Image 1 (cartoon, rainbow, N blue to C red):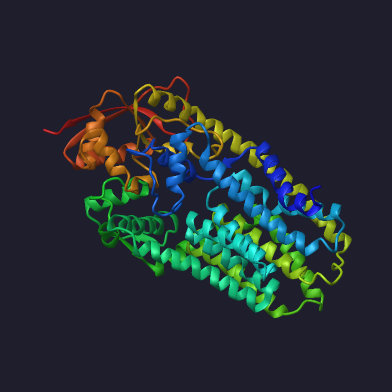
Image 2: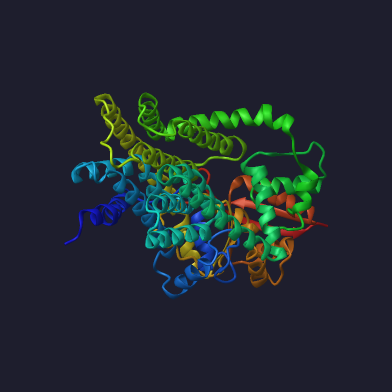
Length: 540
């Protein structure tokens, strides 16, 4: 006979994730499908077994699985399996806090409410970044709650290691946010546990950095530099740049990093600057305004629930170390503001942070299992029901929008997939826009080495130069691009906004390019690439 605790901690998370899959699972960004195509070898000369920035040690396994059983969605299955593990760990923490003080049916309702408000989005609007944050943070809380149990510690250690392999910085963020909860659950030993886990992730990241080749180190540096300019707006272009550098900065703006002679560390050193006198008055207020609207629009339910918990703590004298509790709240709020103001706080980071923050605060409010549960007023439950209804409405609307976005993307991706299977070569700029909102459980079968990306972060990946050499006989980007234009079986699908830059790029290398858009049988949705006829001839 299965125990009720097993049903709540193991079976219930699986049922809830399955129910979420019934609503649909949608990629939040283009990153996940871009990674999948690299692992499959569709956008590289061979299946990529080292992604350098993430999936350390996991990429070879995933690439091998795609080669052995290409019809299965290994990327989605692996990451959703780990998301299920993180969900089970979080439910185990809540279950232990409440099972001696609530009847089983009410405890299930609490778990359902927690999932609906704090966890549903992770499975619905998916990104690989969510997994290491949640997995590491939940593992830390579980280990702190069950100090002295070696089996639990081993499970938590494995979870932290897996989170660090996926993305070390995201795992570290999850540990940082969950650290106050670990202290509420285990005092100083919880703080030591959090410090040890953070040290493990930091040391692992350091080892990876120290053992990287010069090529990979350059890739890492350029990844940071382009993010500082494109994503975080920390850098600004200098007032006076040469024509070549202006062409390079435009390439960075289009996420076209393929030509290393044009986009390199020297370009950023010459043509971009960190200008506090511009960033602080012009950029930071706009970013903070965006952050505020994001928090209110997307996280209103969790934030209101936090406010209710704060009111409960403020009104009661039963809670120990209240000063530390308030300092922890300020620290997490400062983290949110710092990320949103200086870097950026997309939902794939913001929601996991808020989920772990809520879980930690619940650990504080319910930490003493010997006491009766605090009494909550009817107004608390009324607000909770209203939050659930409002969040259900918001989720329904989001699903409708994501389904439409997926359909628009598939209208482009599926015909192009068929073309590559028929021997056509796809040269694409802006195709990554169609990757958003696709399903982790639908496998696209582009032919091996059949997609040459001109834009997107994978153009920085070291795998792209061997692909150019395989297809054109050279790694030199301008020459490879010109040879691709001469191939009759090359299909050019380009975002219209990149066409002027391509023409200027070819012109800078002594070529005249004519790019003419085909009239599509079915109009292409705005923001997605269009089919172009490309002709390149040497200037006289």
